[in-house]
Amino acid sequence: MIIPGELLSRHSPIRIGGPAQYLALPDSINSLLEVLEAISCGRLPGPVRFIGNASNLLFPDTGMAGTVISLKRMSGFRILEDGVVEAEAGAYLPRLAFHAARKGLDGFGFMSGIPGTVGGGVVMNAGTRTSEMAEVLLEVKVVDRSGCLHSFSRKELSFGYRSSPFQCDHSPMGKGLREEYAIVGATFAGFQGDSSRLMDEWVELRSERSRTQPLSMPSLGSVFRNPSGHYSGRLIEQAGWKGKFSGGIQVSSLHANFFVNAGNGLSRDFRGLMDSVRDSVHRNSGVLLEAEVELLPDLSPASV
Ligand SMILES: Cc1cc2nc3c(=O)[nH]c(=O)nc-3n(C[C@H](O)[C@H](O)[C@H](O)COP(=O)(O)OP(=O)(O)OC[C@H]3O[C@@H](n4cnc5c(N)ncnc54)[C@H](O)[C@@H]3O)c2cc1C
Image (cartoon, rainbow, N blue to C red; front, side, top):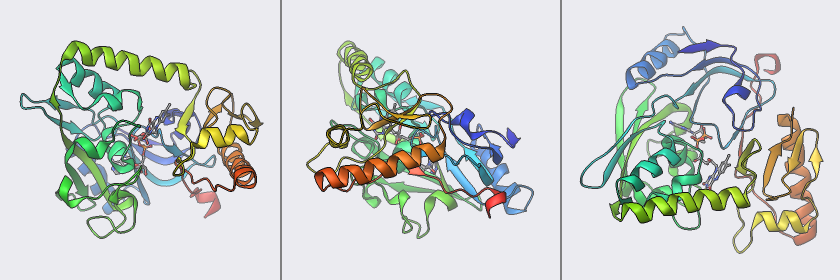
């Protein structure tokens, strides 16, 4: 499905974002290849941006030029008898964690509260205090702009705290992967566990999140990375920002590293609040916070 002028706010967990010139939602590798072909022969415009559930992305208010390709409809996965999981890029992490637990496959519980996809999870090396994507990853499959499939084994890739080789300009294939290549799937390995214990753990992790994070409000999760030896939420709270507003965006009064959309919040409110909070925390504690949320540049045709 290809939609011209689709509002990105409709595809954003924080409900922010102007129109994409085109939004493509392929539901298979073949339909993704058709979209890439249409771009390479000029039937659809560039630049291209691949996205998953956009749960770590702040879209610009003025929208995005070119073609945004969301892989969230490529959402299938299979859990094999030997504990290997084969997933398409759009597989939803909490769903994967749920089915792994139900089958007695351990190692996936940490994904239960991360509202992203396999593709976005690998790019971000998403994780919690207990584990991260790199811990269970075996292989990543990507498609390049000319439609060729490549795979990378875990050994070829080096991951860090919320970072992967797919984020930088020197990806395993020598180019910025996010613009040039789509992650189309990944393979993971778990280990044998007890399904009723794992199901209990899944429920407990979900309810712990509901107690400690503002999940009833639209957000992008943690706004800033945790600096080594600190928690960003605590530093923001100590600087007096809990509950404060910038336009329609509020520093959550439950967890200060979450900014929530309290109604009609805009990207510019979110960015303004980030700048003010960063400056204030720096003055207060000497620690310079680094963004975890990715701020997409304003590429609307009107501003180019
Ligand atoms: C309530 C809430 C709680 C959260 N909790 C956590 C947490 O505990 N731990 C954590 O690590 N994160 C957390 N997050 C952040 C977010 O869910 C993760 O970063 C997640 O991995 C992003 O996945 P996504 O599919 O939404 O990716 P997106 O936000 O869509 O994209 C992330 C990046 O990956 C790129 N990308 C996405 N898919 C592809 C693809 N198929 N091919 C190539 N590039 C791609 C995008 O261009 C972008 O650069 C939370 C977010 C929310 C809203």
